[in-house]
Structure formats: C-alpha cells, structure tokens
Length: 634
Image 1 (cartoon, helix red, strand yellow):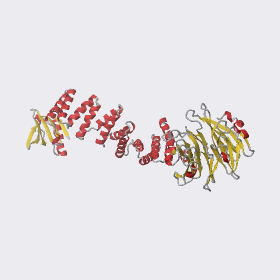
Image 2 (tube, one colour):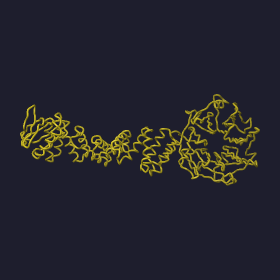
Image 3 (cartoon, one colour):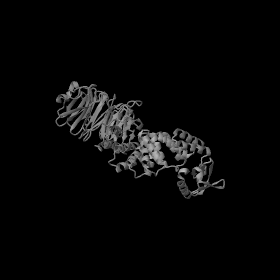
C-alpha cells in the first residue's frame, strides 16, 4: 500500500493520514525528496506538526516538514522504486501539472523501464490514456496496477467502464477480458454481478466459446445466486452442457429451468437444448416431444425450422446391415405379432421383438435364403403373414410358403400354379391368397390348394401389370403400373375398371403404387408422369364413393413409385422420399423428414404399422418411427 503527499500543499493532512497508517498497518517504509535534492529512504518512526522521524541504516533522523518536497510511504521496503525511477516519476508529475501530457507519458514510461513494478507510474499512464480515449492502453496499464498491487487503487469502476465501452463498440473479446478482470479481482464490489454474467453471455452468444462460457456462468451463479440474470444464465448453462456432450447434467439443468421459469422468453430454446440432450441419451421419444414443444414458445422462424428438422431426426431409428439385416435395401415388410419379417435383394430376415429389443433370428431364414442357391440368397419382393403361414414373393423364383407348423417350405412357380415367377404383391385372408404378377393375378384357395388365374384378355382386368393388391371381405382391389385400378366383386365373380365407375381416371394418376384398407375405406397412392403430382385417394367401401388428394407435390424429389400408404385405426400414413405425412381427424400434420445424416437417398419401397411403431423400407435401411411420440404430441 502506498501513500503519496505533496507536502507544500497538504502538510497537516499528510501527518494525520500517515500517523493513522502507522497505527493501522504497523511499520511503513518512507521515500523522501528534500528541497536540497537529497533523497532519503528509511523506516517510519513517527511525526508531529513540525517534523517526521525515520530510521536510515539504524540511525534515527528528524526531518523538518519545511524541507520536504515529496514523500511516499510503502508497506514493503522491497517495493520502493530505485532513485532513477522515482526521479522519472516526479518529472512526470511535474509535466502533468504543466499539462505537457506527452512528456509526462514519456517520463512515466522511463520510470517503469527503471522499475517495472512501479505501481504509481502504471496508474498515471493509465489515467493519461483514459483521458485520451485510448481504452485499450488504459486498460492494459490499469491491469498492470492490480497485478502488482490489487490494493493500491480502487479499480473496479475503471474495469467496468472499459468493459461497457468495448461492449458498446461490439469488441466482445475485449469486453469479456475487462469484465473478468473486475470479477476476479473485486468480486464483492458494486457492478461486478452484472459484469460477471455479461462476460458469460458474451462468451456463449457472441464468441462461441462454450467451455469458457460454461465455467464463467457457473462461477457467476455460485457467487451471485439471487441475481436478476439467473434465469438467462440457468438456460444457457443447460444449453452449454448439452452442446458439450454432458447430456445427463444438461437434461437435469434444463428440466429444472423449464419448471422454474414456465413463462421464460428462453423456454423454446430450452426445449430445443433438452431435446438435444435426450438425443445424446438415445431417448428419442422424449427428444421428439421437446422438439415438438419449441414452436409454441418462440416466434423465431429459424428456431422453429431447426426444431422441425430435429424433430424429424428424433422420430427415427434406422436399422442396417450392422444390425443383422442382409441388405440396406428394404423391399418388403410383414408384421407378425412380436416378429418382424423383412425382405431384401439379399434374402429374408426375421427380427424378434418379444424382449423389447431388436433381436435377429436366423434358424428359419438361413434355410429359406438358400433354397435355390447357397451362394445367392433369394431376392424378396413381397411378404404376407398370418398365424399359420408366411408367404414370400421373389423376383424370379415365384413364391415360397413357409408353414409355422412345418419345417419344410413349399415352392410355387409357373410349373405349380403361377402365371409368372416375378411377384409384386401378396395379400392373404383366412380363405384365399391373392398374388400380383406382371402376367396377371393368381388366386390360391387355401382349403383345396386350387389355383385360378385372372388376366386382361380373359377376365377384363384393366391390365396384366399387377403391382399392388388390397383384399376386403367383399372385394379385391388391384393396382396396375399403367392403367389405374381394377376391382373384383367376390360375391358376383366379376371384374370392373374402378376409374370408369367414378370418373376416377380423370382425377388420379394411372400408375398405382400401393393399397391399404381399414374397416370402412380402401386407401391407395399413385404416381403421375414427371410433370404432374403424386397423390393419395380414399374409397368408401359402403358405396364405392371416392375422394382423391393430389397434395403431395414433389416433382423433383419423389422418384418413380416412391409413395406408399398405410392405414391405422384413426390415421393414414403416407411415406415418400420427401418425408412421411400423417393424416388424423384434424387433417394433415407437418411432414416428418427423413434423417439426412443417416439416410442419404430416402427412396421408399414399403410401409407397415405395428404396435407402437411405423416401419418404412428404404434404400438405406429399415426406418422406424416411434408412434407414441407422434400420437402423444397432437
């Protein structure tokens, strides 16, 4: 601690203060300049109204006040500058009084060169630069002062003013440095609370330094737990933890924030950050719910769009060859209770979900896959299953029927009842099996084993290129690749072209892709040629009235035959490579986009709905959407 006094002006004040200091702090060390030019250094012994007493080299001296020009008191003898430094400092002081500021600066700098820890010289330089408006240099020298002796001057106002000036000038790095100096050196002074939080906010929002921002904000909250800035800091701490991969702590922190500040302006951001944490923890359902909660709490369109994309990412689980599938190209799906049958160009896969986890089973599929060629598994294009049998349609080997009560499968091809060995679709009911081929339809009666063929030439089908089927108790619906829909009346044993009945051919495309049925309706999808839209239609079974919606317009995105339908109890799902649409009683929901990080080319080939999940076959793997997340956030 230093005490500086100009004796000619403040003799009485000097003695009073110095005497107080001797009592309060104990021994002091004195540097005195006399009028005759002498410079004395020694230990303070005391003083009165006419003189002071010091000890120099074990000799006690009494110095009359009238002979003293300048005196400085120090706590430590080692901190007394050398004589050359003090002379330069005194010259600087003289130049200051004469308003010769550049010469004053030069003198103070010389003093520092002579004695780098000359606190007073650093301070006076800082003041000069501050007066000039040079905040950078002023802050540098103020910083030197507190590093040398934090108690020499009260500097908190200087650091706060510098930080505020830098902030106003958008010099965020410099503002942070000034605020952190203030926080670390004077944590208990006025204005430090705002400075500490401001430094953390700037590091997070402007400088993108999450690790440093997290540390500063955690320190600020620990030191100022009742701050007016706590709300924003609490959100940011959770968000930063999430971005840094500390998912468990982020989830807890953000949950506390959401509960504590239900009306916060950062609530939407908090849901987004917590969704990211849930994704890191692979809790996709919770992540989906949080991403879905962002939009109601923000007006930020960018944030809403980002949440929508992340919601789509969270909706998906993708299974590939690394999970035991024969190929990433999924061509057919059949759900059999807690078993999933999957068809690929490289064979059949069976997945058991009875334990709640993905469990490949190979005892059946290994045998079926090698029925024709041990080196080349079957190319599975269609699947249908019930409690008794699994029917497998292939690209060029016809149909394989696997009985669950038998260990040896049956094979049906052109030599055994099929019009063609290339199978596009299979539908089964308790009495019959219907099979679509590129040479018409085959019907198999399960009780007798009898086969019957239907074709355009002999039975009036709209065409022989049968790519999709739907079977109801009264009718069989067939979709062709070029000529629309045909319908078979099972009671009257007649075929009709459905488009002609309802003028449907003028409203829907003729390239039918898929069917599905509910208790009341038949659903279908089609492709137009490239210059028109894909579409979706419904046919009411009671009166065969129909409605169509050409609303899925992705001319540049959806490739040929990439639009598939699946019907739930109260929903309709449409899967295309542009995303998945869900229709509820309230209408169409926003599309769920495929996760671009995991599916590079989302070409869709099938969709099926199981308990708690929608399964979609793509060219990049089997995609699963957790329907509890979807239905839980209407």
